[in-house]
Length: 332
Ligand code: FBP
Image (tube, rainbow, N blue to C red):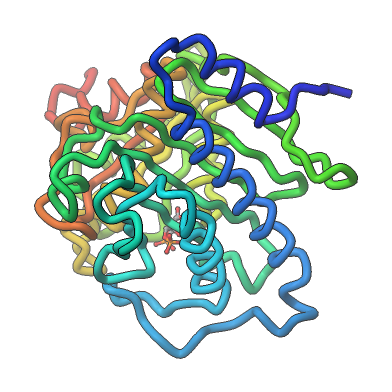
């Protein structure tokens, strides 16, 4: 049984940085604690009547589930003491939450998607929490509306058969598994590397009629018979970005959510700051890539807090090919 706990791993890495104050370490450990609390709530949600909708919609016009709001609350509470965080932004809150007690001294701003894969909640499907950490500079939105390269840490908690904690603080990507009987995340894989090429793709093909022709052509290319190029690829789309990304992190491949004129989502569906930037940093640190099709996701600076962006993420080979199709430089 592995024995390196998340806290020990984070603290040992902190000691590698003489100037470290320990605040980022503490902050990452708090995401671990919040993840354990959310895992517990998910496990009993059906019994606790916590499934279903809350009767409200979020700023993106999506129906909020009770568990979206419960997870949001648990995350906000996790940082409500100790003066670490000045601002928290979330998919489930129109405006950022300012920790008034920490507004001046909190050295970090955090962003999160409390419950990714909401359509899986009521059917016991795989879910996740995505998080991003930035340094506080000027305070308020000015600290948030910045490129993805300014993140100091990012990661996700995956709620599946096991609960996993995956993060990077810009020194590789590390994977931990929750050992329920001791309530600790234990190191299961350090310095995870994404395979350069995969065999699967994750996209909601049911919507392909609304996609740009270039993305439809890319999808058709993946499905052609060509054993030498590892084609045809298999479809692996779970309804949860975190679950699909985690598979790609370990097995390679590509996930994409392009612009979709059939649902009026001309900029795609996924939100840049708390879905795409954090996973793009994890992919980048594991040797993969995330793109709009035209530029690296990490270079995109959002105009607004809940801005959407066309998104493709995964192995270098597949994302590079996706970009060639979008730029109409597809292989003949
Ligand atoms: P939520 O954060 O609201 O769940 O939205 C993101 C997401 O659910 C992704 O996890 C998933 O890949 C995608 O949206 C599913 O969207 P669609 O149902 O349009 O395929």
